[in-house]
Length: 430
Image 1 (cartoon, helix red, strand yellow):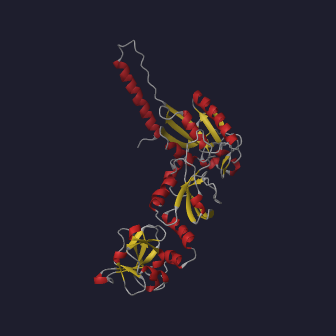
Image 2 (tube, rainbow, N blue to C red):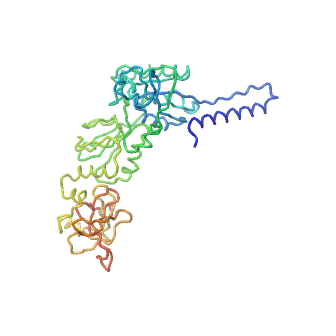
Image 3 (cartoon, rainbow, N blue to C red):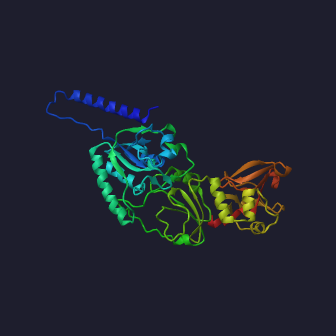
């Protein structure tokens, strides 16, 4: 398997070989001056914890490689254990957590890359980013060319004027030539890929070089009733994408789920810090009831949503404690004679059962011959000294009821379902 360094070496050899071959073919054309440029540059950037920064740079078009490591220290061996010692928290000779970025300047310029760098963290903080405190988290740019040094100083001055106008302090970013870079331990490389359950720190100020034109964000709808707001990242965030894939893309619940950036929460009362993405907020009448930073699985999301939507109710006990509705309960009485339609998961909104498969069993619980295809899972249930087959919703994982083989009409199966964990949608609305 080729490493990034092997790749770069092979690429350089390939270019040299090609250039040599080309030169030989033109050896008799003395009147021509043939030149070629690789357009490969490296720059080392420090903006706090290197895990999220590495992933952000790798997602940029034109970036060939991003490698976490240590730089700008002296007096001891550069390693994660050494730089994070409590005794070195305020050591000016400590190494900084940095990312060495190799990029094709013909695709992405140093200016564009450095604008992304400044916008992705808070350069006005000294020796820290958010809750990460210590000299290893300092804001630093280590250049490898005179042109890079010129560009970074120009951008630093431009960004300072914008930060000052926005009420921020002085930029603390250190700028100096790179002397030596030490790659971090292997377990730090591509850390966010190896550790998918978490969040991407977002310490950005929200101040940008060029304001992207956006329609004004109207949060009026979020001020009434129960709402779910997910704080997304302006940059690539693997945890955000994982949450979308595992949870929100399939969510169809009756409580609206809305995405916002951290600076698009005007009018809302938020208690949870918004520097991590994703952050999931449960709101009622515009005020946060509960917030959770970081990626959450479908099971974790729906349990939190269950508490938010159902509260201390029979429905919650049925859904998450595998309880059973009272026979002939109020909800059963409502649902046993509905018009043509679909019964959906009370939390996820996914269709589970069709009225065309409903029949009256005389048991006091809703009964169906089968569910909507691929929407439930079956599990052994040996509780209460009985051997039964438990039915759960595939989307939310909530308990629905039990399957009794052969107890339906003409020997069909009977899916015995608790009415309190369902909602009904008439056919013309489904």
